[in-house]
Every structure is written in structure tokens, then in C-alpha cells.
Amino acid sequence: MRIVRYETQDGKKPKYGWLLGDKIGEISGNIFGQYRRKEAETPLADVKLVAPSEPSKIVCVGRNYVEHAKELGNEVPKVPLIFLKPPSSIISNGEAILLPPQSVQVEHEGELVVVIGKRGRFITSENAKKHILGYTIGNDVTARDLQKSDGQWTRAKGFDTFCVFGPWIDTEFDPADAVLTCRVNGQMRQMASTRDMVFNVPTFIAYISSVMTLEPGDLLFTGTPAGVGELKNGDEVVVEIEGLGELKSPVRKE
Image (cartoon, rainbow, N blue to C red; front, top):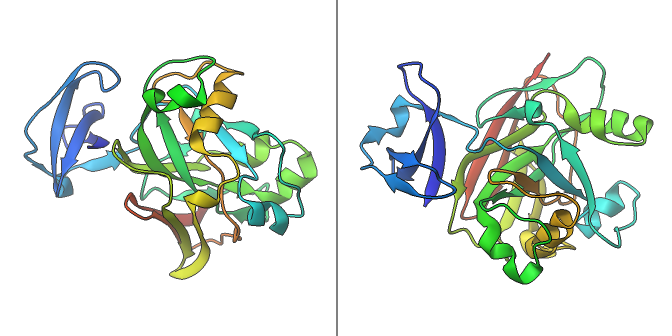
């Protein structure tokens, strides 16, 4: 099932729904517990898709592809290197990434994103799958110059519009070996398989949940492959994951 959040023209708060072809059916109840799917009757063209989850936190794993670590002159971590992005940085598919005046080197980072479905602490890697609702596509936008100058990553990763994800959550997606690509203005920048991750998804979940409780709706960004590059005013960046879909973002000066 592909889960979406969407707004209709009546201006009411976004609803959860499920996607069937080019039609959406409303989901009533709690997508993390008991819910009911209504018939898919609303044309996708008549609604606006918004970010498909409302996370309490966004946990990211850095340097999780060997070649990406190398391209920035870093060693591959011995254990997952984690950091946070604030929920205020979230935008959805089709919304603009804004280039802040504080940075002169904003870069894309296409990633596979895990959406947590069940609360947990000290989750074992063997039980990790029980805590996953599904997967989506992400772009961990980064002010690379500020990341280097600050020494820690909060500012570089935390600007408004720097957490792009969507357009839906796929509950049946298999993350074992899917091709991830990132194109800017149609030109290929990144391409790798999720099998190239240093630490896999169950390992992330076990490691992160040993530090903090994971809540339903939380996002885990799983790292980006080599090929990160600068974004300029007027660019369009498209992150695509085989079998999952694509995530498009125009780029604008703030």
C-alpha cells in the first residue's frame, strides 16, 4: 500500500489516504494502529500531496556509503554516525528548496528514508521490521560550507526547506537492492544501490533505538551515495529510487 497525506480544495487540515493508480481513498482511524480504507474515488489531480508523515524527530545517518565518505575526505565510521534535522525543515514533493543567504555551497543528498510505525526502545535488529511502517524518498539538503566551518552539523542541516521527503510511504518496498539516483536539471549526479550501505536498516534501528525512543511517524534518513553537488538558483533536483518513485524539488534563493 502507498500511504499519502493530502489537502483538498476545501481548505481543511490534511488527511491520510491510500493511492490506487491515479485515485486516492481516504484512510479513517490511525495509520499506526487501527484504520479503515475508504474506496479510492478522488482523482490525484484534484488534491495536493503534502509530506506523508509528521515526525517527532528526523534521525539521519552520515557517511553510510564508502565512496561518499571518500569524496569528502572522511573515513567510514566504525558505528553509525547519527545526527538530527528539525521538523521545521520539512517540505514535500514539489515545494522549493530555499538557498539561505548564510551559505554559498548548498548541496543535494538523495537518500532512502525509513518511516517508523511502532514505538520502541532497545529494538533488536531481528525485530526491527516490526517497527517499520514503510519507506519513502528523501533529500538531506546540506550547507556544505557551514558543515565544514561549524564542526558540528545542526546549522548546515537544519535550515527551513532542508528536509525534503515523499511523495508517499510504500509499506511493501524492499530496501535490500534498489537503485537510487539523483539528477539536477536532467544530469545524473548520484547513482548507487541501497545494497552498498555500510550499515543496513535493521542495524540503524537497533543502534538509534539504543539511544532514543523511536515514535510512530519518525523518519530515519539512511545516508547518501557519492556524487553530491552544489545547487543553484533555478535548478530542479530529482531523487528517484527504483520501485519507490521520484521526489522533485525546484531550487530558489530565499
